[in-house]
Amino acid sequence: MDHEKYMKRCYELAVRAGKKGFDTFGAVLVHNGEILEEAENTADWDKGIFGHAEFNLVHQCANRYSDAVLRGSTLYTSCAPCERCLCAIASLGVENVVFGVSYEAFSQLTPGEASPVDRESLLRGLGIRMKLTGPVLEDEGMHVFEWWGGDYRPLKELIAEMADVKAGHKEEGAMIEYRKITDFPRGTVYDILRDAYSFDDRNKQIWDKNWKETDDFFYDNPDIADRYGLVSCLDGKPIGFVTWDPRSRPEYVEIGHNGIREQYKGRGYGRLQLEEAIRRIRTYAGLKRIIVCTNSNLIAPKNYESAGFVLYDRKPNETESAFTGDYLYYEMIL
Ligand SMILES: [Zn+2]
Image (cartoon, rainbow, N blue to C red; front, side):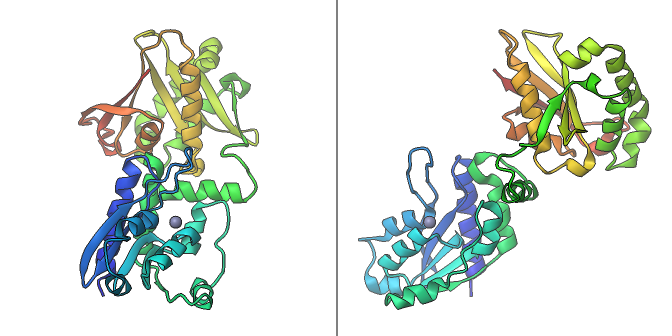
């Protein structure tokens, strides 16, 4: 069977929808090995527009193909169809549906759990023949959701965030609070930096002295530390900090250090910390842009991009820290 071939096409359509700012779903109708129609998700939650990919596909096919062609066709969809789409597919008369991501796997990204209902039997009870086949290339299909709504976010982070919601934390980062650097003892900044860069021993060899100087600077200048920096706390424990340099206002403010302890990375805290810093920086009257320099092999670029920063320059890193990747220059025009 060519299930994988058609599923890959569904995933392409889903990512394309995501990059347009929609949720990431795609579907195709195949007859005798030929793709007859393709559709992307165009749902708009705010406007109450349904727009699911399968539903859009059904509308494209209605009044266009005979019952015989539709009965002999297979509908491929990037994710197991919701109930409304199942009904739409049934009314179109398509009897074979192949899905990429299963209901169970998809439920990792939704607040609720997958319903254990046997959909084929339910439909059969209504006299509707439908065979649901899948999952197909499910791992690949799960990664498609990284483009959900247009902002790239790692799958691991999306699943962790929803796991928090399921655990009863209603809002992302409900437990995170932002405190002053001087609420914590001298050495805290150094300790977070050392931890944040502990993924590679070479960092400490190169930067240890700089981290100590940074710590000294902020604790020797508490006014600067507390006006132009903040510490992210989880249950009272400092898990990260960010600072910014306001001296080039109103032309720009440059984000300086921005780190999260290793064990808290990939769980959305880096993004929340950055958003809080941006929120504070934006209050400077007449400010034109926020800039930051980071390295291509770090996790930070993803955070900056998902917060709305745009890459405007890139330079090779030929220093001893070349292993952290090229220098990437991001900006946010205000
Ligand atoms: Zn649907």
